Figure (spheres, rainbow, N blue to C red):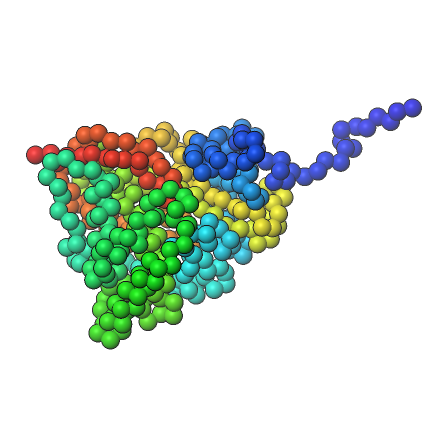
Length: 394
């Protein structure tokens, strides 16, 4: 005689990483091909499926256990719990430009390291550099010009002025940073001879700062143990992020000239960074097993958070795909706007990038958009495909 088993008596296994929603996979490579070629549609589809399933996590098949979270609660936990979510196992570790310094320093040493180097990047010290960076801004071209290409060269000069008083060899600096603008895996390829040349130039200038003094960022970092590595890594992290944010901001102002006034520029920049966060995806590794809303995530899982998804979540923002600087008259949803990360690991160069971009916007004449392709292209950072052709309004 058969035994009737009531549903309440069935042993149900708790949900795991393998049971999470996921985007469609491709035979043989899971999500690797889409991750390399079209990651934004991939994660947008993953988020759509996760929301439909009532969760804030989805799985990616990248060859190692991987999950993406996009809710404010997930963002807060990942960026605040430095014991569980470790930076050393994230994507930065495989990119030589970013594999060092405070970026890969985990708790408990991270806070002490940040306290050592923070003073140089604080608002008070940056004010001492402002005249120098403003003087380094190249002239605004007459007629039509590509805002993306112009921003690239402008930011190179501005960072040279802020970090090195404009004394770093400009051709070497350009050669050093150029690979970061290329698609992956080009930024991850080793370049030992180039790095040796850059480190030699850093040592030359640091020796001058230690013997003759100075007030640029290198002068602050040179006396710190490991300070030259911090200078090299933070410079690499700053260039493309600032370039792309500036290019998008200029393009938005050319399209929406009613917002081109100093009293509006802060809101324009915030809205630009919401729509196009240069740091579109961040990564950590789980240092221990994590129970997230009943889902068991194993130690070693690649844990991702997506500022791009959080800032375009229709459950958090009205008309999230539209450029609306007026939305910044109110506070944003907590932990949903993360162009500079958050918590203890807030981007070291946040104040520097904001100062440089706002100063450039204040110096721009009235502009009009002519033609361009502002489609976001994700790489190490998120930037416009370009060109973004604008012209001065006479």
